Length: 133
Image (cartoon, rainbow, N blue to C red):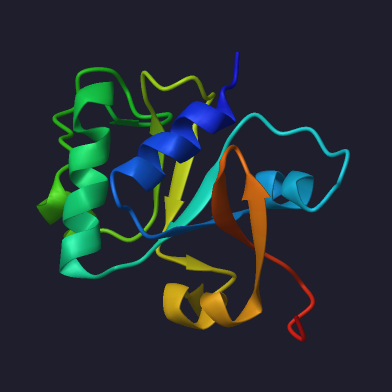
């Protein structure tokens, strides 16, 4: 079962700066779309990358679709040297895509087209196509 609330709370409580994009962003804006993953754009500052790595450390992140047994360790250095990761984890999601940008727009610029959506007990930001908001 997909538990978006648990994953969003985990990221938020860890102090990770992130934006929800993709299907879940559409759902938060009222769409009836079904999704089984949580697409996240994360801020690429050294501190935030460290918080993200620490947040996911104990949920066994692994590259989705990669053969079992490959030596993969998601830590701050791995995130710093990569950009986008689609992970499987012990979290209640089918996959957790982590993006350094959304549609070729980096985190800092994406923040300009956000709508704050109060959901899951915390105010989370999600993207919207209406840049006038």
